[in-house]
Length: 76
Figure 1: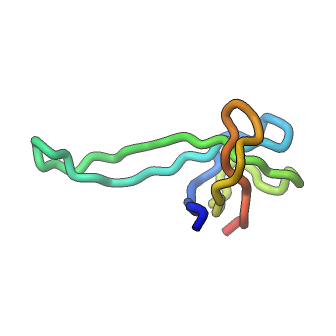
Figure 2: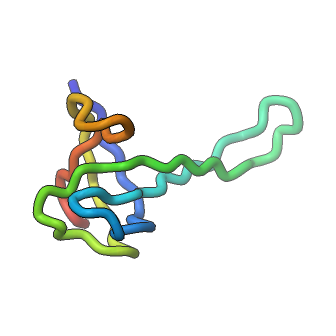
């Protein structure tokens, strides 16, 4: 089973590549306070269909470049 994630596109300046932010709220193990964790992913967008601000669904794939290991599945 391949992993799927959803996030928001923050950059569409590169050709066929998008930078997507995935945020999650987790409880701190010591202080028991909820903290927002943010991670950036570079995803492959073959048709340059998504733009900044779009919510997207992306799926794990083979390494496409040094940083890209995810492929655009759908724009939500």
